[in-house]
Length: 172
Ligand SMILES: Cc1cc2nc3c(=O)[nH]c(=O)nc-3n(C[C@H](O)[C@H](O)[C@H](O)COP(=O)(O)O)c2cc1C
Image (cartoon, rainbow, N blue to C red; front, side):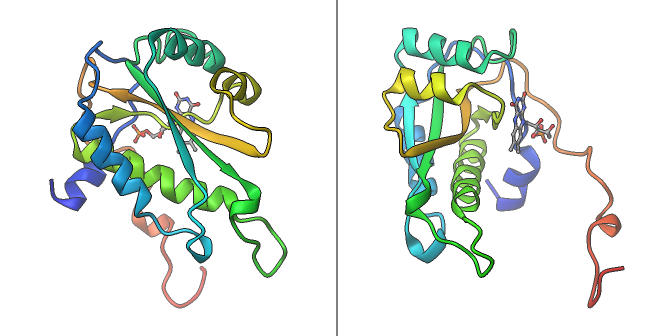
């Protein structure tokens, strides 16, 4: 799929069929995430693919957004240790930025493979870490269901006009 088609076709899906995504697709998606840029090429982001039925259900419960994601066949959980990224000139930690770039690579690659995802930022991090046996030093900053959507959505359209966000040579 053309890159710009992928960008337009990626939508957030909250309801899925029970079809498990093909292993080869998942592998290509993880390869796209692996190739992401990161601070000083530190590559600190890790992924847990949750596919055991009982664990998928536990993760859904830890998300706790009512019926949304209830039928997700698998989840991909992203994590990073703050030590596995850098700090900017103001001393601010950059690990959430590394995380965001890597996770968006993964989400766009899933769209290119015809799979639905939904970035989930609202969930019980401690519960997720407990379910997946994730060591203390890691932060789980996002997760996503991955599978075939029950109903395809139209392309992205509900965005502000470009003029409201782009300026040339000075902020106006
Ligand atoms: C960082 C981030 C966190 C999000 N968290 C949630 C979430 O917890 N639950 C949810 O249903 N959608 C979540 N979303 C999806 C957004 O609501 C969605 O991307 C936005 O409404 C635009 O719709 P689209 O993705 O279909 O283009 C999140 C998206 C991002 C980027």
